[in-house]
Amino acid sequence: MKLKNTASIRKHLVRWYMKHHRALPWRETRDPYRIWVSEVMLQQTQVNTVIPYYERFLKRFPDVNALAEADAGDVLKLWEGLGYYARCRNLHKAAGQVVAAHGGKIPDERTRFKKLPGVGDYIASAVQSIAFSHAHAVVDGNVKRVLARIFRMDAPVNQPASYPQFRDIAATLLDTARPGIFNQAVMELGALICKPKTPDCGNCPVSDHCGAYAAGVTDEYPKRVRRKPVPVRHMVAGIVHKEGRMLITQRKAEGLLGGLWEFPGGEVRKGETAEAACIREITEQTGLSVGIVSPLTRVRHAYTHFKIEMDVFHCRYLAGDMRLSGPDDFRWITPDETDDYPFPKANHKFIRLLTSDKGVSG
DNA sequence: AAATCGGGGAT
DNA sequence: ATCCCAGATTT
Image (tube, rainbow, N blue to C red; front, side, top):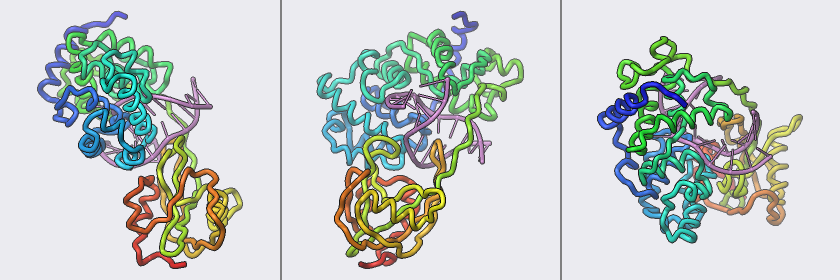
C-alpha cells in the first residue's frame, strides 16, 4: 500500500483534534472498562443519544465487577430505548468472562480482548488503541467516509467486500506513536467536518490532501449501494385486563428485542381482521381465552428492515390457565408497574395512554 | 455476501 | 421519506 502525504495528514489531523475535539464523558478517562462501555453504546448510535445512557450506566455499574455481578434484567432496563439489545446481553456476558477468566482485568492484548462476545474488529481496535495505546487502526462509518473522500476510493462503504481495502488504508495511515488520539481524530473529523452531506471543507485540516475536494466531487463520495425498500407489517397488541391488572410477556432472549417485555400480540395474517389476530396471537402464546373490549390506538414504528403499523386493543380475560408458548415469562401488572420493565419503543407509544382510569375491570 | 438487529438525528 | 450513526453476529 502506497499512500501520498501520510505524514502531513497525520500531523494536521492530530493538531486539529487537539484544538477542536468535543469534551465527551468517555474522553475523561483511560479506564479500559469505561472506554469499552462507550464503544459498545456508540455502535450505530449517535454521540448525543449515548451520553445520558452512558452516565447512568457507569454510575450504576462503575467497574467490570459491578456489571458482572448485576442482574441481567437490571442491565437491560438501563439499556431500554438504546436499541440493539444484543449489545447489552453480550456486554453483560463479556463482563462475566472478564471476571471469571481474566481476574477482572480487561485484556490489554487485542486478540484476547476480541474473543469476548460483542467485541468485533472495531471495538477491539478502539479500546486497545485508546485505553492502552496499542497501534491498531479503527474502521467505522466516519473513517470510511473520510478515507473515501481523501483517497477518492470507489469501493462502496456499505459492502462487506470493501472492508479489507478500508482496513488496509487505515492501518497504513495510522499514527502509531499515538494511535488512540489519531483514531479519535479521524472519527471526530468525520462527525464534525467531513459529514455525510455538505461537508465543511473550508474548515478541514486535510483539505489540501483531499482527492475529492481537489476535484470538486466531495458530494460523490463515499460511494454507496442502495438497499431495497422495507416492507410494512400489520401488527396487533392487546392489553389483557384481569382483576385490575394487565398481562405482559417477555420476549425470548435471542432475536428482535430479545429479553424485553411487551403487551402480547403478533402479526395480522392476510384476510384476517386485526381483532381476530389479536385474540389468536394471545391465545397461541398464553393459552388464555380473551375477548376484545375496545380499540385503544394505532401506532407506527420503523425498524431497520421493516416498518409496523400496530393496532392496540383493550381485551378482557375470559378463561383458561397460563400455558406460555413463545414468550419466556409473563406478569400481571398494575399500570404504574410498567416502569419496572424494559419495553420496546413501539409499546411506549401506547403505554402512556394506560392511566389507571382508562382500563376496564374484570 | 446478505440478512439481522433499534431508535433517533439530520436533511 | 431517506440516509446515517465510534458494528457484530448469524445465516
